[in-house]
Length: 233
Image (cartoon, rainbow, N blue to C red; front, top):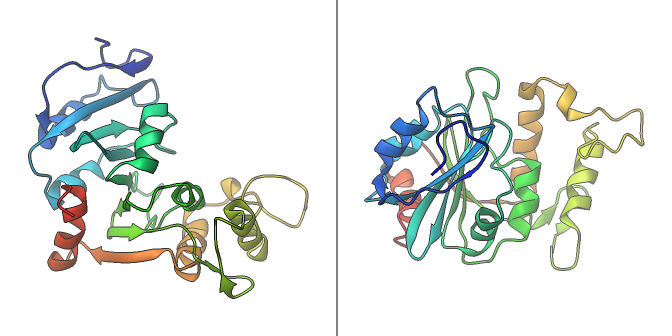
């Protein structure tokens, strides 16, 4: 078994653990998410406070399902990574939740799926609930179903979601995919995150991606979303 800090995927044959124990392990200074991809099967029920504790980690975390068990996987500060098994579960399992940690002030305001998340959701099966957890609460979302530019319904089986995202970015002065073809468009990576986050949120709303959302203070709404997390739907 690889030790924290070693390169590559960490194969862990240990028995499933409560999520609190997994979080405690990931908080150790010896764990380096940029170097190590870590997965562990979660034992027992996951509570809303567990999700909020995941948001305190300085990297993204995903929860997916395999064989009717919840699997926790680590990402980096910027994304959830590209492990093939994880990507498959993100699209074709009974759960895909990922976190948008605030990282202090660096990512504060990330209260919606990213443009990349919108594209990933397009390729996900209809039985895979897509959830993003963030500092303000949780959101159950889907791929875009409406074109904010043409004001027409959007069908990802007939239209390209990347084109939809690019055109929305273009309309807001952003070169989302960093093509560099139009000098009037700004690379969003060069802007403060707090300037880009509201645009991402507006896309989520206008593209009708939101199925359900709840703030952390909405106990009933959070409880409904936690049913997906605990595979009770």
